[in-house]
Image (cartoon, rainbow, N blue to C red):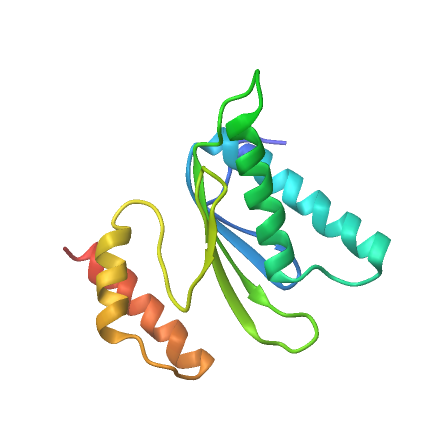
Length: 152
């Protein structure tokens, strides 16, 4: 194993899969992200083994928000310094869902959103340009939003 492969294995990515049908994007402290991602992945697998059904996006969002909220009130630990966007498809209907959580444990559903640096600029762009469209058009809009912010 080379040094570079060790680094890539230990680094935390900003966008990760929690399950086959759910992804999480995060902004904040990397160490907190690692803990939250690992706990969420374990919950997804535990739910699948216990209930014999994959988690819904809302279920895992509630779980993550619950963890974040618990850490704001527990002694001996500090709150997570992390905001997340959780996106995925309902395993039964295929309906897409997008949720956001904040460090206090509050969560909300969105049609389009952004988190982290330049999120206000991206939100403004999405508010001006968002329309109910196909999946392919939605992906193109997301790419345009990122390019718009990166060129400023």
